[in-house]
Amino acid sequence: CDELATALRRGRLKEAKAVIRAVRRAGADAVLLGDRVIRPAMDRIGLEWEAGGLDGYQEHRATRAVEVALFEILRESPA
Image (cartoon, rainbow, N blue to C red; front, side):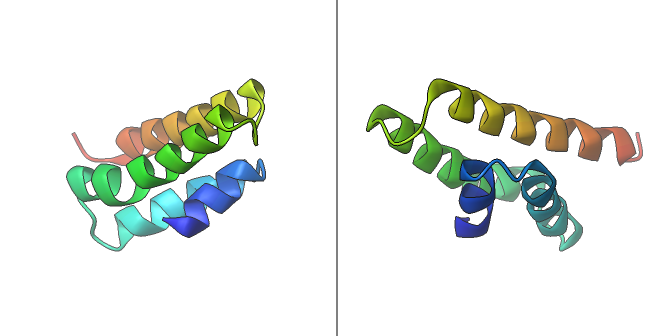
């Protein structure tokens, strides 16, 4: 998802979490969310880091933002 990758790259953590939550609220299950939204965005972040376009802390920040968003979704989901 371009929107997610852009938010993560720019350090806009609230925006990144909002994108993930919006996709989930729109009915995406965990597989769709992971395979079609999060993985492609994180692949882009990783490739930019490998190419020297991002610092290590930016890649780690992006990973943490996704992790936090997923934990929040899990916490809000019925058991």
